[in-house]
Amino acid sequence: MDLIADFDLTRENTLGLVSAARLAARINAADDLDALVDEARERDMPLKILGGGSNVVLSETVEALVGLMKIEGRNQADQTATHNIVTAGAGENWHEFVAWTVESGMPGLENLAGIPGTVGAAPVQNIGAYGAQLSDFFQRLEAYDTETRQTRVFTREECGFGYRQSRFKAEPDRHVILSLTLALPRDWRPSNVYAGLERLSAGALPGEVMAHVLALRRSKLPDWRRLGNAGSFFHNPVVSAAQAENFADAPRYPQPDGSVKLSAGWLIEQCGLKGERLGPVGTFEGHALVLVNHGGATRRDVIRFAAFVREQVSTRFGVDLVQEPIEI
Ligand SMILES: Cc1cc2nc3c(=O)[nH]c(=O)nc-3n(C[C@H](O)[C@H](O)[C@H](O)COP(=O)(O)OP(=O)(O)OC[C@H]3O[C@@H](n4cnc5c(N)ncnc54)[C@H](O)[C@@H]3O)c2cc1C
Image 1 (cartoon, rainbow, N blue to C red):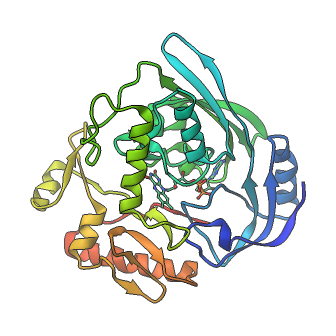
Image 2 (cartoon, rainbow, N blue to C red; image 1 turned 135 degrees about the horizontal axis):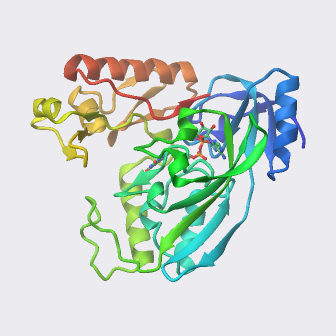
């Protein structure tokens, strides 16, 4: 395993923040983890894992040993009477994995197509889009525990999945996810109830659904290769039914437990902040929930602008927005 000093991370994060890791190493196999933890302990540095860098706000200098997740491989592990069971290494690109399942006649994940990042990070925030989330398909994952230094399997119950939440997000840096196994129902039907997908016919094929989802994403989100961003920057706030009464004009999404999810993007837009900018960071003109780097931004610029947005929303609506990307 090669250690690289002062490794440039500017191209390793979709926000395009100027950043470098004090030390970095590629993780090509599960066997690399023991040596990596030894190195981190000997140097008294935290070990941080980076996948595609699409859900992080990186410091200018990341004072850590950064493990760049590169474990590859994907396969159909099994086929039961009801499900196709598929497994992929944590370093695989999530969208390429989704496209492979669809092209291989194992549909199910097409509503989650086009989400940037790696397979290994998908369970960390239980990725979701267009009415689907990872936990709908989750069967198990394998992870290395940096405390016990054992590799073990986690069941769905052990992962603590919630809305953009899991135990891996709640206990940062403890587990390194190595591989993910999903169960895709063989009795497939298009899931077209979500806003934007209702134009799909009940007879739409999986590839058509995926193409439609990708086109919708392209029409709403900036391409991070041209305009740095980390997707949605804040969680949609969930409030009590009583509180939701104060938001009569707002889009409201009732939840099974009686609470109501509000649109963070709508709240920001109502504060007049769509397209607003402070220095190199602002909200995207087409979608107020997406913070963009107009060029040369650092973590400090992002944090300053995010604090400004949160303060405006809190003052106007009494709602505290929670940041989605993780600060490293
Ligand atoms: C344009 C755009 C659109 C997006 N759309 C969506 C969307 O629709 N839905 C959605 O849910 N998200 C979305 N995101 C957010 C992001 O793509 C997902 O959260 C994705 O899963 C992050 O993957 P990553 O590999 O880039 O993770 P990174 O950003 O590299 O890491 C994120 C966190 O996970 C940890 N981590 C990464 N890999 C591992 C591992 N193997 N083991 C343990 N911990 C790990 C990191 O330490 C970090 O804390 C979007 C982002 C962008 C830029």
